[in-house]
Length: 179
View 1: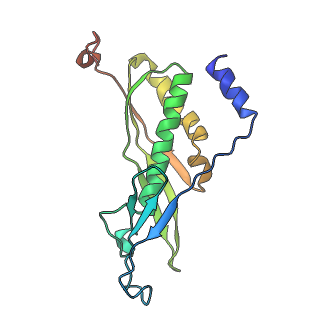
View 2: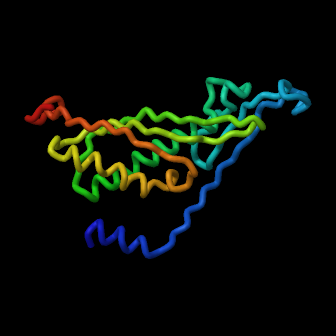
View 3: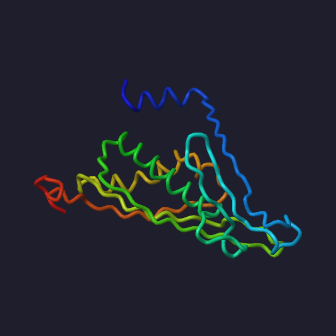
């Protein structure tokens, strides 16, 4: 069975995945939530078998800038999911990726009532390829990866992609070709 046939047969079956995450507020400074300034935003995010993730609010909302905030984690989830989806579709299309980095950015707009929502996230993946002749194909795979990304399919704002594709410097890895 080819990878394409396997993917097609999986598409016919609904598969549910469940995730269990714990969040514990650790910011009680002794007064609880008696006022907006009385409590800390510190928290721990946990999942069985993994180290805890130290969280807080964004610094703009009296959070600890040294801890991860939910907005950063959302942008990180989109970036990581796109990368993993991209690597998968690269395999399906015979594109050999030898490196991948991203510096993702997000824009959240706060509303006058104190709420807000993300307006957009832009991914800036830099993809390194073994074969520079596949650059156009590699660039086109970002659209397919976006459609396959579970997180991007779950948000109600646009996820933009501004990819850069480079060729691997094979000589540095012991190969004969260079960029």
